[in-house]
Length: 225
Image (cartoon, rainbow, N blue to C red; front, side, top):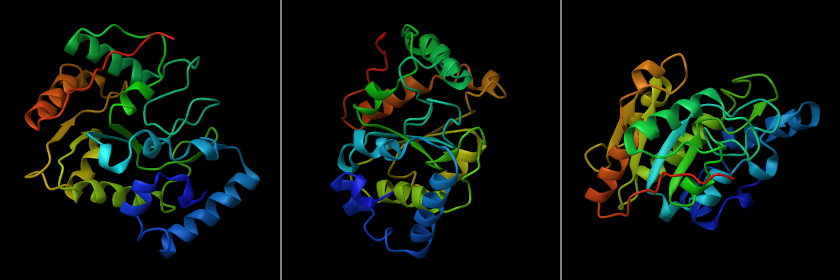
């Protein structure tokens, strides 16, 4: 895992992080993990959220927690899965709410790349996981790194819409100046809390905030593949 895998705009925004002790320790931990275990997503995909949404082009930050940990699911974007992979339960619930909120048809896949390409940064707080072991890479440094990502976006003059679903993500709200950036919170779309997520109409709320900022709304309709 190398900082060179990040786009130049993100390398510049996060320049101070890569030489810090926690990041060097994280790199060593990941090298050891990949030598001994199956780790998701593949190394080439770990920074996809950054590649699709360069620092100066992020319009929305949606924060997830931990990558999917089953075969072929995770590809570096929170909540998203590769084409051909069964849509996970939280994403199924997101699609149900999207249909209720904006009338979008539910796609036959869970690939959220079209959102990412429009400036929706789909960032997990932890960017890797050991296969079949949820949260196995938490507290090894990723959280410090992704907090720095949130702070870097908060420091931008151009506002970003921050979206925090569930208690874990909402704790990150303290990193954001809500007087400068819209902050939208809701329950998590997981089946455990989806009853509270349904009816929150987050997608139309994001677009309203973007329009207030003079930015183009997101086209949330995903194509069938």
